[in-house]
Amino acid sequence: DECLPENGQSLSAVCNDVLSYVLPYGRGSVHPRFWGWASGEGTLGGVLADMVSATMNMNACAYMNSAAFVERTVIEWMRQIFGFPKGTSGGLLV
Image (cartoon, rainbow, N blue to C red; front, side):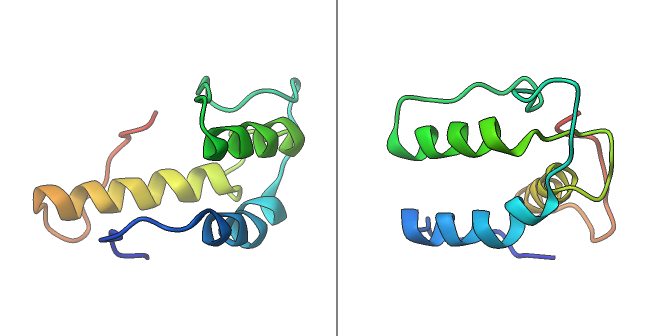
């Protein structure tokens, strides 16, 4: 239930978010590098994201993991950007 951020976050704040909202919700999968077919980028933040994904062993098959919450948050942000009414849902990242 977060509002769309108006400003970016520092790398330190992102690290704190990872520690609070990502690491506690890891799940096993058949392959430790599965992350929804998303590849990283060549920045320090991208390296950190790849490191987290390589160590989390995330499985998107269970709802109660961080991937589902990220998708739900992004859908809410898109709803706000495009002015759709509250309660609008979708499968944007599926």
